[in-house]
Image (cartoon, rainbow, N blue to C red; front, side, top):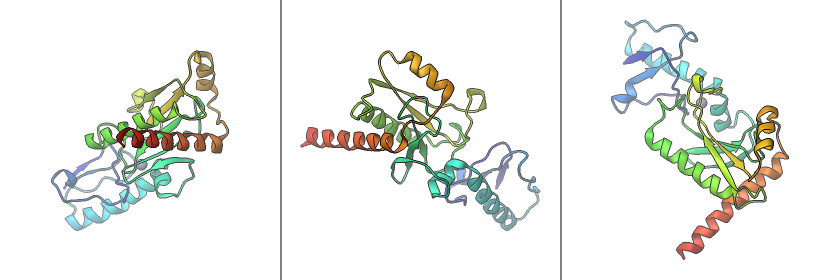
Length: 205
Ligand SMILES: [Zn+2]
């Protein structure tokens, strides 16, 4: 068992797997939990790990949204990802896409999960052109780490609808970060995903 004290990596189930050598690496946050003695028994380490991971997951607001313990206006979810409206949107329809399994930053994110995350972000950006939002484009962005202004330490992909000539509106939204008619916005985004799926079915038929 290897203990690393410089980051937090709870899984969404709150218990680390030990089915592969890599999974035997345990991450704990600095300054939050007491340091585990290097001489601790395997059973003691596992018990501590479970207790601490449960604590860390419950402390992560995005993990709490995944488990339904915190509110969010959800747009889409499957086994791997969840998309929900940013509560402080820059533009109407600003959505966050997250992996359901906790990863603090890109260093911790499984590359396959990163591809899945972007794949859905790509899909959502396309669907934004097919809704009442009538987006002309989108910004897709990940703030990775405190140096890049990451404020919630669970990887998230911002998908921000854009319109031609919206520079001033975008700048104003960046400052104000106010929600816009949340339920209607969410309904529009869901219908855009449905419309995109319909188009794809027609193309392959
Ligand atoms: Zn989390």
